[in-house]
Image (cartoon, rainbow, N blue to C red; front, side, top):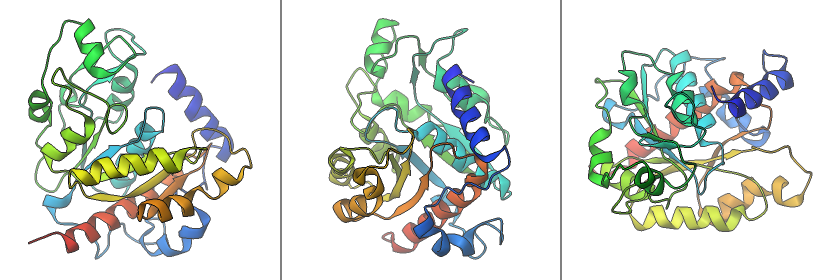
Length: 283
């Protein structure tokens, strides 16, 4: 785990005493989500998506929005409920130690359920910059098609959580294929992680429009409080303003200092959104 991740997790453990009860869902949405909360009933009971709908991508409008932490919460929450989960990130850059990048190391901690660890983050580079530049500096020139082929094929009934690198329109490959292009090629629905900070209405709306232009289904938003709340109106009103601006539901909020006790509730909300997507998908 990277030094940054360790400090982040330590803040979360301190905030809840290492036991919880921080919830991933905002107080206004907690009551609605409680029937699917695995602490009160089995996760997905009667609401489990079919195997072909157990794949999703976790993207964000920009880097440093907390998508790696949210991805980890979804993985852990599903596993707590007895689900098998594989994970994948096409490329990770920066925070280089012992031949691996920071996000690659953090995701490797979550390896399990029979997945070959080499498939979790197969391309890692030292330079902390856009993946296509980091790869070029390392003498590696791969295409978007290469990244599509890298995605592991999970066994039937196993969830696959694929996390992007950087923002929705960050170039990943030498042909400048973006995260949005990667997800579109893989036909994955998206969980969009964003922050509540000033400016989020604009950047989140732009990310949503970029995904919608490619006809990519969006399950909903997760608001990640990567910084302590400052008491501003912008932060306090972010959830309702983002829903109004994008037309998307906020599936959960991850408070600053939240701990993994929140994982089950967030996984339940994501799975319910997947089930809804399955019910409305064209036949």
